[in-house]
Length: 454
Image 1 (tube, rainbow, N blue to C red):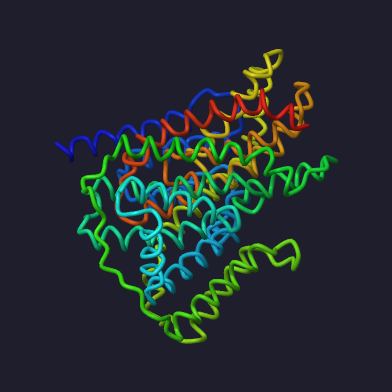
Image 2 (cartoon, one colour):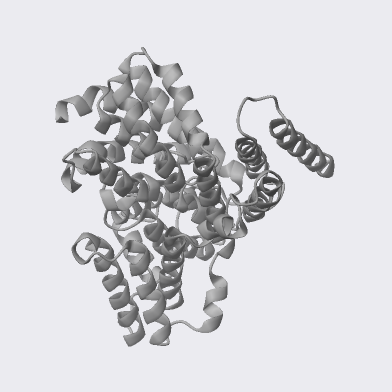
């Protein structure tokens, strides 16, 4: 029966691809190519007919081969494959390696021991405590890095309590809790997520005086409201099957290697926090733990095999699709459709529609790619509609971080999926509820609260 379903999905995906490619839509041929690849990628990502990172390869392959029939100069191998090693990929890799260092030398267990001492052995309390810790980390470093650092802590707890991948409800809640809270926490500060910094840059370029503390005033209430909502939804979808977290950890004095790993961790975090002072990008800073951990013999060559390369490929595929949309001008078409739909509408409806658009966009591209495409569009759109530009830019920047539905949406979701404890459907079910509540909260906040802060 499963084979029949898989065959049906495969046929449906191919038909959808061809239907869009040869549709009578009055758009350019390359725009049809990109649109058809987007539809195919969405179907494959949601159905998991093939591994998610293979879908990323399929999308890249079709852009080059099918796009080449119409114009061999646009989607060349160089342009399509370049996003697979985008700076954000290096940031992800640095976070993975840093987490490997913590895990190999038992520091993840040490953090777990202290967290359990603080919040207790009850699964729901531990989940909330770990989510709060993850969100706080995401204030001061990339949410990608905080997920990569704290996910091993969850895995230590799950392994210690005999909870197996895909079978454990608490395992699913814990893994998703870290991913979702990292994404939510990343909303809170400019450095928490790339779309935030992107939005700030565009606002400053557009002549708006908008800084680090301004962002926190606008975004922090959203974090405070949405974090307990995410915890509550996860505990309802995945009630823990255990009532007590076993802890066989005991505190021992730190070894020299552990101290050195902590020192490298501290240097990396400090460099991430002070990016604006020293001017070194977060992706370049991510190379520091890679270089130092290997230079001091704290990691060995075979340790790099433990990196989730499939997650990096998956995220690269999302960036490639986002770049393709921008290259062929589909972003402009989307903006025109939005303007036609929103012109003359009430501000509340406009804000709601922009946020929904941002969330939907991240279903087929990473939040970074979606922000890179959407933010430049929304500035003239806001001016044309007569709404505050900073409101429009911020709802897009935060909105692209409200996709808790698919692994491709945000780096934390990608990392969570790589743990092996969840399927796409496990993420989508609670993710849709949390995303919907997030959309409503952000709409109400932008409409009722933000005008007071201006």
